[in-house]
Length: 163
Image (tube, rainbow, N blue to C red; front, top):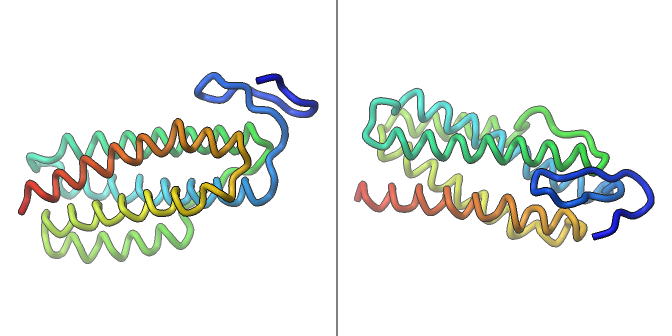
């Protein structure tokens, strides 16, 4: 792809990212970023609380995947001329409430909460893809969604294994 007039940069995937994105695209990307920041906080809490569990490795892998997506989304937003969100906002508050109640009921409830969060992530990305310009839509489809599907599958399998 040839860069157009205006700003251009190299995305984490190696593709040339050209031009400044619209307000709608940046706003949608920041919504995705806030969701990922919330997921990172939730998984950190789960790893701390369930670190001795036989499921600790799956939780740590999922945490790393969400952290990678945070980094990718931040970079993409900046490359497209936007300002990246710094906190999870209302999603973080909701996640803390949800994870706190799940922690009171034990490991199975915590895994159920994490799997529900993964469902929510898939739904958000899929529902809001149309709000992105072509460059950002391809970035989300190629770099973000496959990882979201992978962590969703891991948590679904873990939930099923617990009965």
